[in-house]
Length: 193
Image: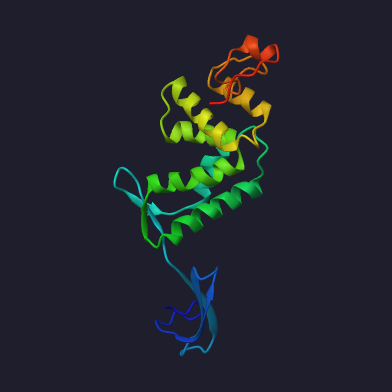
């Protein structure tokens, strides 16, 4: 390690400590030529292998930029985006690989984004998974409804339906399964299956 002051080609390690929750090592060094001290930090470089075969260093900012587009117009803060990117990086690093396919990065984004905002998740998933029809959107919306029934908001359903090109009347939807709308309007409920 070159001394940053005199450019001497060697230095002596005085102290080593872990940092960033074990993801880095900080070393206090001393230069034998000029006697000055300096600190270095060593981290494992995580690389992402793209489909083209090119590798590039993992970049948390790329995750934030990609997810920010999906969150446009949604009540998601920059702090939430930064936290999501940190969660994705932690998930990827916990796997213990130095190189990860870009596809795995996308999969690592889907879970935290689904927890953060279902509409942004649907937007991101539609591009990432290559939705090609309204049926793809409808299937994903149905999966979201089934998983998030207790947390689902009517305004999210209306927005998602609009995004997918579906126009439903307020109050109509999959919640009236197994019966007809006329019977439900008259207080008759469909039998549970």
